[in-house]
Length: 484
Image (cartoon, rainbow, N blue to C red; front, side, top):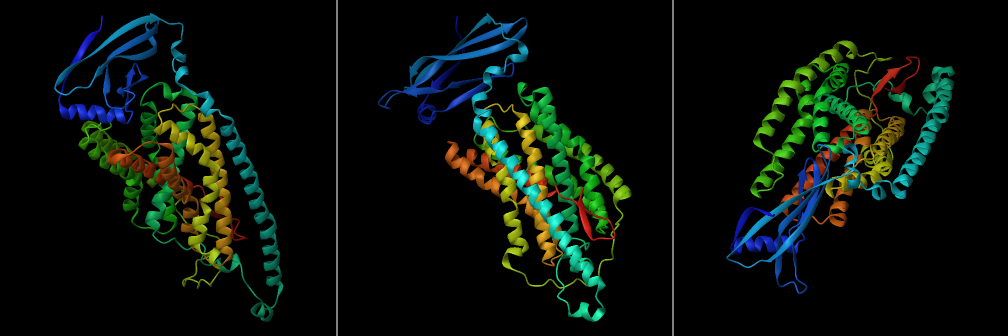
């Protein structure tokens, strides 16, 4: 027998709200034992004049042993919306035995025809072709171009002083006395590098755990895992950020530690709290409880900060001493004029195109799983894309850094970081296309929710990409840089 769970006094305001929801095809989502079910609010007649509300929810729950393995929802009881009436909402539950195993109960929610589509495989193949091309390009630069540079510089060393003075010297060797000069704003730079290393570690660990444990089977498990791993990897942030800041001669290491520790949490929490105020205003279920906010703040102050301090101390003591193969000139060398396409701003803008091109198809699948409520389960694809992104970003950064140094511009640190981090700009621009052409979102809350969290995602991706190429001096007989 159906049971009544509530009664609605349908005044004009509530009727208008239901009519608005039916006109815009609103639907709702519920969970029973972490299994999602969806239902539609109501429907309109053929003429669009009368509107009807589904008042009876028929739940059919399948069980295997003492475990729920299947849930289905059927909406019935169509009632016309008439002001100043009372509408009873009722439901019934029917239990039935099922042969579905508990570990296979999410299989019907997966969409292999979408995630394992031929286009998905083709995008991976296309990205691998891009990797081969870039690796070949970088190999040509390092093996052929640099060999010619070494040969030219060897000839110059054999010349006498008169010939050398009359010779036309140019190229990256001319900036050997300035290339190890500390970057501008080293405190912010080292904090971004440390945060990027931590984001990369979190991404790698979470993807591996998701491949092993199938985190999509438990609601909220992916977010909980990401928060736990982020807190646990805080020493990575402190180690790389603190050691880089020490090598650049920074003295305010405590301030650098605080900025590095709270850079990402402040960005995420600030955006989440801003959106949360809008959600509270709209009485949305997406509003974050106050207790959750307090718990996140406690994790930042009592877990992330102490672990970041440990990493910073280790980084400063183990790898914080500069070990440059040559002295830095006391007076900075003047930067000669160069062609417009060798300017750092142009290099930065062009640097993110290839990394974005290697991942934008995967971005479509990730966006669809998050914003269209599909369950993302092909974490093997995500791992391949992460590896491809690493290789492409490293290759692009090598090429950009070589071009900049060859133009005798020693401001390579920020250019190296931003040329890879500019991938975030293209991802955020793609999110605009996805919003207007692939979703049906509208209104202040949905727009702020979408673009707010997409800004956080894009910024974190950019910081992670920017850290992919840390440089250190090697082989003192040459002024040569190797990736670590």
